Amino acid sequence: MNTDVTRINVAGERPYDVLVGRDLPGALPALVDGAARAAVLYSAPLRARAEAIAAGLAAAGARPLPIEVPDAEAGKTVEVAARCWDALGAAGFTRTDVVVGVGGGAVTDLAGYVAAAWLRGVRWVPVSTSLLGMVDAAVGGKTGVNIAAGKNLVGAFHPPAGVLCDLDALDTLPPVDLAAGLAEVVKCGFIADPAILDLVERDPAAAADPHGAVVRELIERAIRVKAHVVGADLRESGLREILNYGHTLAHAIEKVEGYTWRHGHAVAVGTVYAGELSRLAGRLDDATAARHRAVLELLGLPTSYAGEWAGLLKTMRVDKKARADRLRFVVLDGLAKPGILDGPDDALLERAYAAVAA
Ligand code: GLY
Image 1: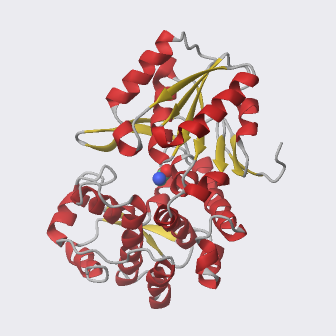
Image 2 (image 1 turned 30 degrees about the horizontal axis):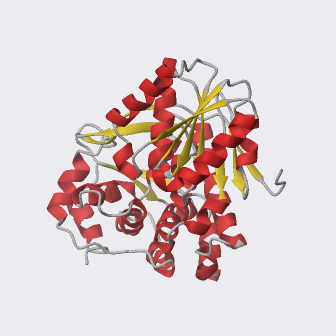
């Protein structure tokens, strides 16, 4: 088996490891130990990878149950989850069996939710194939599906038994998706690990080269940030909120745009906005605020948005993270010093928007 694997532990009631490396599916049988059946959820573009994983599971003694689901958000629905539960029922899936999700964030969110609800919770393992999925969705146990009223409104906190971040998958990831995923990595740089920002500034091309060592280091650093945060606060009752830096505006942009914007692109704009809001609230120095735009632009990520402010503000108010009617923003009180801005004035919010308005 491949020995060049980084293991990042996530603490909590049921601690688990995130494995980062190449040629990783060989590590899967150890994670599904004792399972007689393993459902493998995947979307059509990843059929070959899922078949190889299923063959490995079969060789290890777990009967694979491949379930093809629609790609991306189209698969993250209650109807698709119900279809998966029907398949588990037909296969006689028991409490000791395991669900494996092979794909990006949408497929792993679905797989986790299918596992969370089946028999009130069975083991699951995300095999993450996108950079965004590796640094965000696959780690931390947030699982769920979308409903007409909004994204991720139905779900469960259900930490996985382990996570595989197979860097081989990045070789075929479109460069635009790789760069979009880096927006979440940069966010981790601002809230917790400034070495991420130094790495991007030193060599932005290397940061976006899927074959290089820099992208691996960036992924591992971002996963360490997330692992630390969710290990301390699985249920988002405190610290975990800092992961939402840049996300309040980002979610509003995604919604206003009918989810045609990539999440990472919206996060890039939202991160610049959060930096500016921190500065205007008198909490962040000018240079660190300006660094947000500079770093994201080095990666070719969007840092401005041509949308009408009133619509964005209205959308932010119905974000599920708003409490009562007050908006809450994660801001910075200095580099890597996240804090909360609770109930800011609309005028301040609008002034910060001028920094990203195209
Ligand atoms: N994506 C933010 C979180 O997992 O809490």
